[in-house]
Image 1: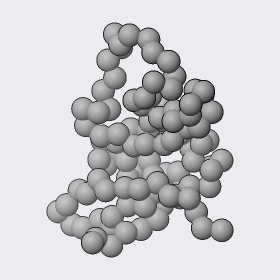
Image 2 (image 1 turned 90 degrees about the horizontal axis):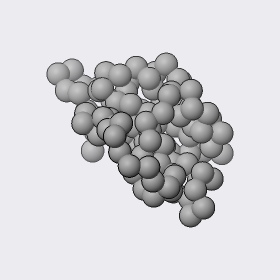
Image 3 (image 1 turned 60 degrees about the vertical axis):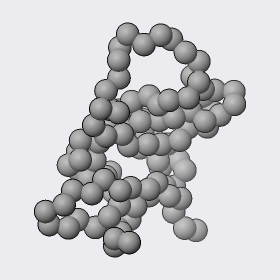
Image 4 (image 1 turned 180 degrees about the horizontal axis):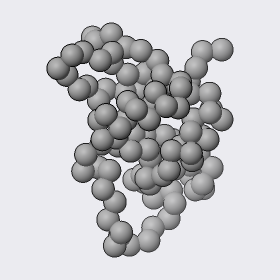
Length: 103
């Protein structure tokens, strides 16, 4: 397994995502809608949102692209960190995992 590092700094996270064409997204995983957000970073075509989509309930699955400020609000409230593979020259790995900070 590749060596990993833990990112908590906003700029480091944004820079890591930008280098991989990643965008912040939130998935609502609550049964009632709007109460249990789960963070994601989406890449490539998954970052494209069709503006002509039919309206659906907030908790119907899928994700919503959001601004970084909204994403970091949830990130900080839940005391999270982004674990990523250490950069290797010549490779652009998009492995990432959002974890709760210890303690």
